[in-house]
Image 1 (tube, rainbow, N blue to C red):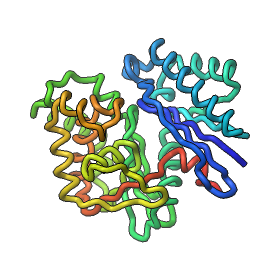
Image 2 (image 1 turned 180 degrees about the vertical axis):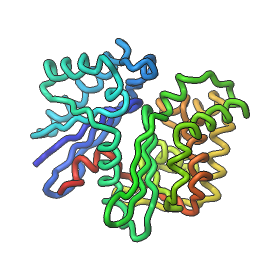
Image 3 (image 1 turned 135 degrees about the vertical axis):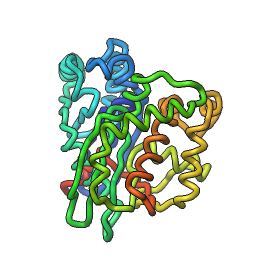
Length: 295
């Protein structure tokens, strides 16, 4: 059976089409929609963002038709969870494109992320999964039996980008106000005993890998370990970079060029808070958890 999963993220929409019997991925693509831009902190989706979302979903529906997809499962996350006008998009998609969008809770999002990552890592030792989104960031502490701590925080990079004004490059004061914001919302979570192995599972971590290795992150089925010292050095370089430098860097996709320093500051803060000693990057996350996690 050919199924498609559409992950309607706050920054990026992802489409994954696969044969669920063979687990063969047939097609995947992404679109930088910036659904949360211009309204996420006011709990609304702007008219411009709604139009960008509809156009991306029209393209995704055309791909599904081409690949003769039998079932489309569309998942809405942080931006749609919070938006008071989310039904505007849901109704338009249902009427025009004839598929429905399921808006999931942060807790359900964390569970599906674990199911995706679990397909790429054996969890012989406990690990802390971190998934950086535009609207939220999920942390899942898990072992081979499943998650034992999971939480979704509304600290996504799009929220942070629109909440504060930043210099270019970021000043020490800019960095401090972001770290203070993270501490105010997340510090209690990191006071508990957590695994010291970190698994990054979002597109931001793929960007980190590509910046560090200067090559495409092409792992198809298993998590890749990276050198912790080189990873930390790469984060420092992103934090210190200018917008012009990021604009010229081919390893940072367009939607992340403005927000990459925020993802780096957040990751560095987590590495310190959880005293991380080992870092892996997983090619799977929410959409793979939805598609393959129950097979």
